Length: 231
Image 1 (cartoon, rainbow, N blue to C red):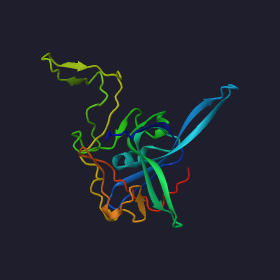
Image 2: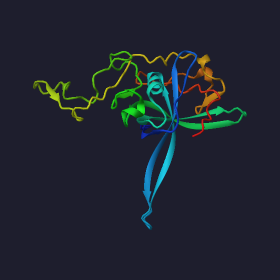
Image 3: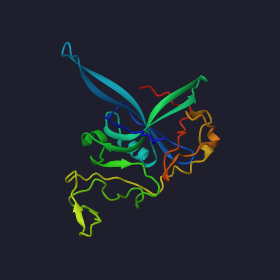
Image 4: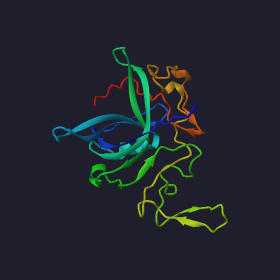
C-alpha cells in the first residue's frame, strides 16, 4: 500500500493569547487559536467577500516554549504540521472529537512589534532523534543556505567541490534541532485517563509514534478536560 502524506501549511494570525501548560514529566505544551483569511469574488456581481477560517494548533517541547515566550494575540506566523484527530470526554461526560494541527515548524512573521523582541525570519522546528548535532538554543547549519556560509556538496563525478548558491540570497533562516526533545520518555501515568485518541487505544498502552527512528510528540496530548477552548 502506497504511503500517504499528512502535511498542513498555514500563514495567519493568533486570535488570542497562547494557552501554555506543562505535563507532569516536565514537557511543555502550548495551544494557539489561529485564523487564516481569504477573499472570494462573486462572479455575477463582482463583489468581494472575506472569509475567516479558525485553526486549533498544538505545539510541544521547545517549540511550545518559544511560542509561550514570543507569541501574542495578533502575531502573524507561518506553521507547518500534521492533522491529528482525537476523542475525549467533556465535563458533562459526553464523548467529543476534535481535529488539531500538531506543529512541527514555526516561523514568526510580521513586524517586530507584533512578537516581542524576537528577530523576524527565524524558523523553529521540533527536534527529531538522530538528526542534527546541536543542543537546544544552538543553531545547526542553515538549512536554506546563505551567501556567507554556502552548503558544500560532494560531486560523484570526481570534480572539485563546488559551493551551492543559496536559493534565498542573504536570508538567514535558522532552525534549532536537538538529539532529544524530552517527549519520548513521558510516562503513561502523566496522561489523563479521560482523554482517548481516535485510535481508541487505552492510555496505558499508548506510546509515542515512531517513524524512521525519529521521535514525535505523543498522540495523547494530555489536555485533560480543558479541550473546549472557544474560537
